[in-house]
Every structure is written in structure tokens, then in C-alpha cells.
Length: 229
Image (tube, rainbow, N blue to C red; front, side):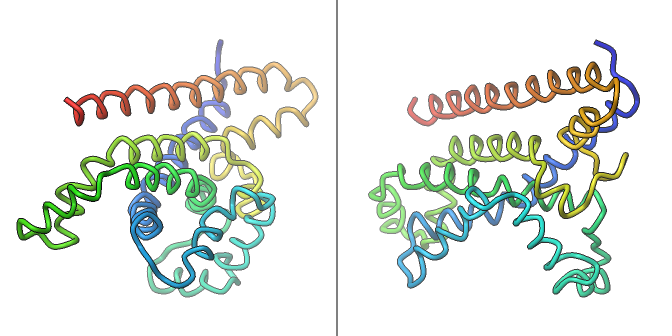
């Protein structure tokens, strides 16, 4: 299966976008998951709903909201560009932002379930030994939750690899800049004679996504066995 230069660029860009989007949102996902798993505060149901909103909203709507917020003439876009040099619209960084947001609910859900599975008596025991609540979290809860953190990160990565609707709405479909695997496949299906190349990229997308899911399961099992043993 030979890949052309444009195909290789789309694969490379997809891996970059998915990796950056996942790693950039991971700390926030852990924070939100802890709040939802352990916190008691007004508006918890609303926060839970907002976190999961990208799962039920049409991706085009998410992309449009990103355009309003982070576009060059958006609410936050000009300020981020002037203070930090961050530009999202029509850049691969915007594709990473869209991919990270679309994978965020899956990551939070997996981490939250993992934190909720940790026996709170272990945290209480650490606190009785002098650890603060934050210290107990880093010494007990986070290590025991690592399988969930890892699984959530890989799930979000797999979701980011397949992200299309929000990305194309927010940053368009620019070759070499924002044309990720899904956008490249879509373009090829609209091009006469592009079926064979689209088929190759579909196989690559399936292989990458399946590989990520299998890797997640293997790592989760290994870490779980280490914790139990």
C-alpha cells in the first residue's frame, strides 16, 4: 500500500493534532474529573452537562462556537494572539484545540470512573498519617487511578484522530496545515478518481484507531495488575 506525499502529510498532521490536543487537555480533565468524583458544590450537575455537551452537540455547532470564541475576530482570539502569540483560526493549533475538546468528555468520564473506584478509606488513612487532602490525592488517589487516566487519554486520542465536523468548521480544510486524515478522506471522496487513495487512508485510520484502543487496554491491564499485585 503506497502512500503519496499528501497522504503522508495528512497522517503526520493527524498524529500531531491528536497528540497535542490530548496532552494539552489532560491536566484540565484530571482536575474536572476530581471535582465531579469527589466534589460537592452547587452547579455540579451543570458542570457535568457542560463537560459532556460535545458528545451530543452536532460537531458543526462546536466548531462554530470555537470560531466565535477563538477566531481572529472572536471573543478571545485577538487577546490570545496579542498576549501569547497563539493563533487558532486556520492553523493546526486550532485543529488540535477542536480535537482536544471533542475528546475531552471521554477522557473525563474514564478518569472520573477510575477515581470513584478508589477506596476513600485509603485517602482517609493517608490524611490521618499527616497528609493534606492534596497530598493524599497525589500519594494515593492518582497512582491508583492511573489505569483510568491512561485509558481516558488514549480514548481521547482515538477520538481526536477521527475528529472532522468541528475541525473543518473552525479551521477549514487547508492542505499541509489543517487537512487531517478525515478531511483528506472527505476531499478524496469528492475528487474524481480519488476512491483508491481514500480507501488507503480509511485503512490507515482504522489501523491507528484500533491500535490505540488495543494499546489502551493492554496498558490498563498491566497497570491494574501492578496495583493489585
